[in-house]
Image 1: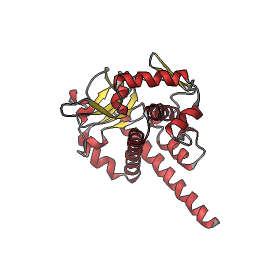
Image 2: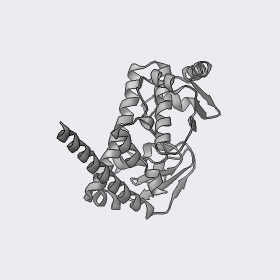
Image 3: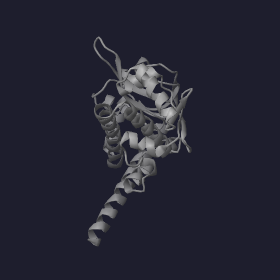
Length: 258
């Protein structure tokens, strides 16, 4: 039994080392290009330089969306500082014109013609890219589960806890307050709720002293109750586990690229 445990720890150590090496190689590639800035409300595909490029978000927020036929716009993912955009675009699984800036953003770029073959040729970098894609898939799974299974309070709690966890994990915040540059309409598009419903639930969460949102600043007043509403046991940012160690190592690309 002890031998099996030692082997597992050794394997996780190797994985952490490979992820760190892959992150370093990817960050070095991003550092080769000058930062590119876009103002709020811009589609990435409006710039020829960004079309089908791989982008590291140095600062700012963006979203992935899908316009439904004769229907509203659905936001399917939110990109924060430290995230990488465009991995699916170079694999031709999603179009770059579906990415919209929510604030002014600063990006580091890897052009398509250089990106795919060179990046995948390095085993640690390919492993790190696969890890990034798996992290985004986990976000998608959490969002889908919340929309399908939770009421409006649970959906808002899941969203706020997810942003808090990701920002805190990357050391972009230290306390319980963060800036949320989404309108109530955009929150509704992300969670499948109407603006009226979003407004009502935000007031409920404030009155219950769980979360307060004022002028796009979210303050978590009761983390334990927020986790209970989201039906999550422990946010990854404070979980004392090997998974947390991997998140700290592989997801702090903001620091590596700064």
